[in-house]
Image 1 (cartoon, helix red, strand yellow):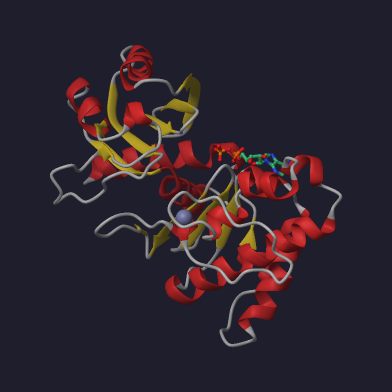
Image 2: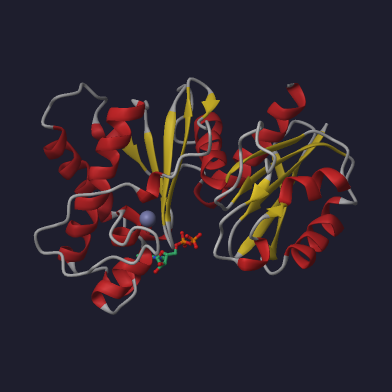
Amino acid sequence: MIYGAIEAGGTKFVCAVSDEQGELKEKVSIPTTTPEETLGQVFAYFDSFELSAIGIGSFGPIDVNPASSTYGYVTTTPKTAWKNYDFLGAIRNRYAIPVGWTTDVNAAALGELKKGAALGLSSCVYLTVGTGIGGGAVINGELLSGYGHPEMGHIMVRLHPDETFAGCCPYHGNCLEGIAAGPAIEQRYGKKGDELADDSAVWEMEAYYIAQALMNYTLVLSPERIVLGGGVMKQAQLFQLIRQEFEKLMGGYVELPSLEEYIVPPALGDNAGITGCLLLAVEQLAK
Ligand code: ADP
Ligand code: ZN
């Protein structure tokens, strides 16, 4: 059985196929332009394989509610060509096989849980801190979704006493994403994150915000592990700063594993999402 996977991002689509055992065999990268153009290349790639199922982890927001008339659509994205686009429908029209559908970050959570940093556990949160902030989760072995999917990046946070930046989320101003994603760092300091590596105040403020988010996810979802990925988390010093701030905020109220084991980087690196998409394909076929 060969499975296909699509990790659909705002700048690129990663498409992959598995070997007979469901393990990642090869992947290609396709630029995200218009649905017609991008999916044309996706079809050209997959058409040469005898796929049994496909798993999609998509940028969003997307409609993941099977009861909705727009299930499978990309909904309110700022990428106008993809707004209200029936992404899942387009794939299903092309391939008469089971297709799994979730967010890119839910897929990454699944990948890390089954084959990565949360191996052997039954729950984890995956948070990416990059151009935006997004989180997904697997809880008791199930991808987290309900009426919609989680939007863990848009939660409210307490502002740092030294904060000078107003925030840049077009919907909420200084929500977590608006105050702590890569573009917020860049706008606050006038430099990109990787150029600020040696400025400890930058990362202390960043950790101040991310730790609050992790406190909230911990208190609401009680995951067994939190995996932090994305470009901003390439600043490895953040992990220890976040753990320290998290410990301070939690105040000893909830019992947790050691924080070195609880707040961790991805073990699959850039393959977390695509690995999760393959697993989603396997699950979808089994359903
Ligand atoms: P995306 O979120 O678009 O998928 P990334 O996860 O790579 O992509 O996030 C890009 C953001 O991360 C940019 O704002 C960039 O400035 C920031 N970033 C990338 N690498 C680093 C780094 N080494 N240190 C700090 N910030 C970084
Ligand atoms: Zn927001």
